[in-house]
Amino acid sequence: MPITSVKQLQKELNEMEQESNELFEHCVQDLDRKRRETIYDAKLMMIYQISNADKMYSLDSKKVQDESIAEQKELQNALFSIIEEKRKKLKEDKDSEGDLLKVQQHQTRNRKRLMRKRADLDTLTPLTSTKKKLERQRESPSHLIGVLSHRVERDIEADLYAMRKKD
Image (cartoon, rainbow, N blue to C red):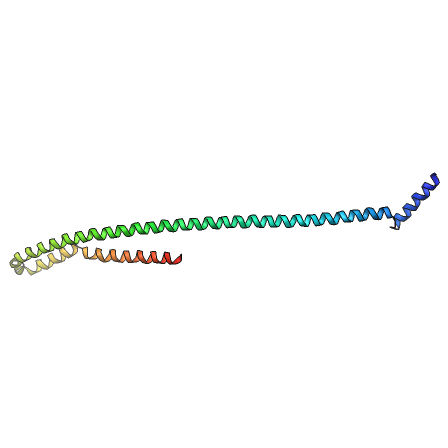
């Protein structure tokens, strides 16, 4: 028996050297199949991880965009409210200017009466009367306030229109 077993071992060794051993070929085929399966599984895992990362990225990106839009709208609403408050203040100031103008008109009527009474004195000294007129004009720039407030209100309305147009 030992001789046959040595012969058989030599035969197997020769077959291995010539790559014709069935057992060896079967083992190599099994290993090759396992290698291909492992490579295929790794590819599937890589595809899964990439798709998962893409989904997470798109969700995070959408979340950031939503937060950005919400913050933008909050800022826009805050600006609109500030503009509306300023507009109300301008209207109130304009209304109070109207009251001041009524008072000023009353004062100018009184001044005219006084000026009529003083007409005799003014005819004697015309230089002093023009100086007084100039001083009075410098003292009361109320006619400018109405013009300026109208310009400011017009600018605010133009800004408000431009902001709404962007929406």
